[in-house]
Image (cartoon, rainbow, N blue to C red):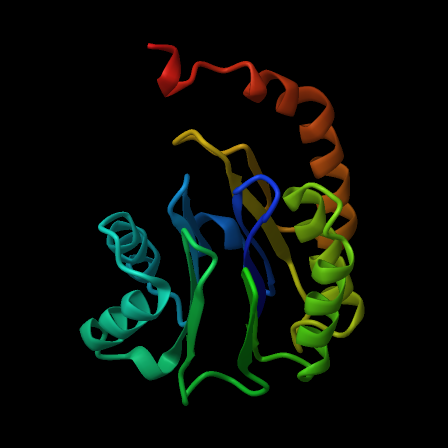
Length: 215
């Protein structure tokens, strides 16, 4: 019922998560990221602690594969979960449970992973991946928006999407981008609209916010 991306920008070191789903308010529970550390997307039958604990373990120095292996051991319903982890070096690992709704799967790449469940087919991941790779010159937030739009056009969730999110961290503990569409008939158009407003009206102020290094 969800498709998503976790990614690291090779140019800036930013980490980001983008997702769309047929459920409302996808951004609240799915997206987890920490500066200079990594990111986690958790979906299907969502367990938010896969994201919360995954980030904690990345901060402790574990790599993506180690984090996935450890999280799988601690969840008795792991076969109903789907999640992906990217670590500080851009290493990725993911899990798609055997009880996730079909079509379900994930595809890791260099510095990213695309994943989804209850999709129209594997071609949705093709669209996500192809668009993400073709837009490497753009800001990570823009790339996530474009990739989600491509996945939507390719068929996306079998029950159609109602919510969308992008979440990007840079060097600070607060997000650089946090755009959420919680319930909308056309979440792609609304995501593009709000993303543009965020970029125009809020992003410049975020760049000027206090930094830990200021102290």
